[in-house]
Amino acid sequence: MNKVILIGRLTKDPELSTTASGISVCRLSLAVSRRFKNADGERETDFFNIVAWRDLGETCHRFLKKGNQVAIVGSIQNRSYDAADGSKRYVTDIVAEEIDFISPKNSSDSEENSAYAPSQEPKAQPKQTAELEEIDDDSLPF
Image (cartoon, rainbow, N blue to C red):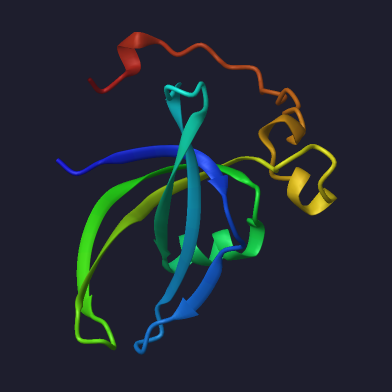
């Protein structure tokens, strides 16, 4: 099983590009603070490369920006490539399956971002339901 769940803040604006075959791919950089403090009493931070494909990537590029907090569910993927100097480079990415927009960096951000914060969503109005009529159990086919 290969599954990862991360909650953190974007360190830069998402970057959207398209593959040669026309598929959208968005790259994000996520900073995640560790749960415990180190010997100096400070929380260390890990930085992860996130890749979101197709509609998910386009949505991230459209609505997210540096500082937004997100929750990501995905899988870890390793790849390698040959650098210009001839050395082999290794990269680890998190391939996103789900991305939840948790909140903007602060509540005074623009209305565009605050509209996607869960605390800012409008309350659902109660739905009117029609009166239900009673059904005779003997008329049911099962």
